[in-house]
Image (cartoon, rainbow over all chains, first blue to last red; front, side):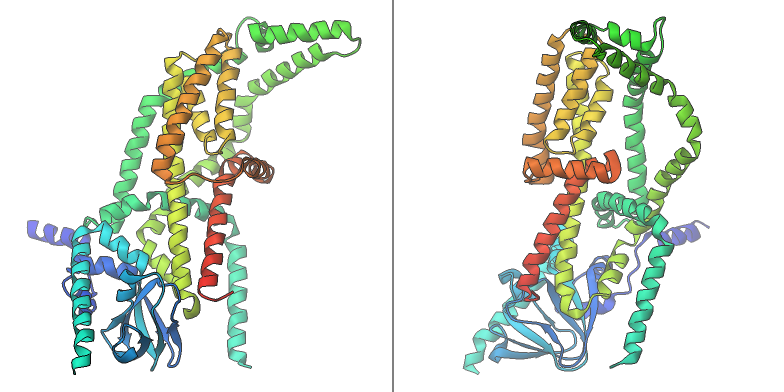
Length: 158
Length: 353
């Protein structure tokens, strides 16, 4: 009886999450189910047709885009060789998020594209409102940026 | 030309117009509920970020607010009722009529005597009679107050149901805030997506901050004025405090109206005139604390509007919708101005204009 009641209470009171797929993105890999649930509240799904401009260089930066489906071509100074094609589970906007208020690159959908967008404001909101989540997100961003710098530095030697 | 697309857009336009006509009676409910939800959202989010499900967070916040209101009521309402009753008794009861009582008050009596003297010197002026009649008609209207309340019981009940419906609508707005937000943003074309995020965040920040600050300020100023006037022994201090707190929403002119009410009460109740000085000093101190500590801390920055624009906005608000609009017109005008400025800046940045 008691077990049934506890199970019922758990059913109503513990936040369930169906957002495990978000862990495919390296910066969300270490987040718990509850943190993924909080994050998912802030994500916007957007669809672009092949050839559509996602954003242009020197536009104000407000969203980080996570590729869910399709291919995204990015042209800018932080892309290796000046051009990168982003595929499923990759993302764009993290560098500019910490670096400046405007886009350093432009992006275009190569194929029909579905992305998840996280606003800069919501990103900082998540980081400041839930410290544990904030530390995990910022640490993951640091890892990602370190790897990206290492890749850029090692490129001329290849 | 794509006729299917055009037909679809026409259909959508028809649906929107039909919905606007159908729901026009509840628009005021929804707007007020949105305001209520904006005020409570940070508290609900605070609970949500501590693993409390959102629906339960909303209920917890409602319970806290109900508790605070009950506590405040227990603290202030008996005083408020007592003071209101005393004021009402002063104006409506006694052996002499209220108008005779008011005329007998020292300050009013000196004005009346001055007008009588003026009448005796200038024939057919009749200022003293007009003055007496004005006070008498005010007394008659006050006497009709219970009848007015009974005659308008239907509108009073509908106002009460209006007040009761707001928390219910706000409950759903608060519980599914992110769903509503996502739904609205999903209708925006990709070209304007980032711009819409910036504007919605700005709206959240400006409106939310303003509303919360306004409510906090009303409460803080009401308490401070009540306490300050009680210390200098001004009668009906709680009544004046609450009125001054609400009027304080209007920059520049709100604090003046608080002082005017205090002065009027002191004069009507026949207290010594030196009390006016004490009351003004007390109200000045409250304004110093409010302007230098409460407002900068709570709002972050003050409404930087020229006094003339504030005056014109308050007057326009009064003409448009009475006292309520007089109170909300200045913050509303400032919010609209901030949003339009933000829209213009970002349209430029996104090279849309």
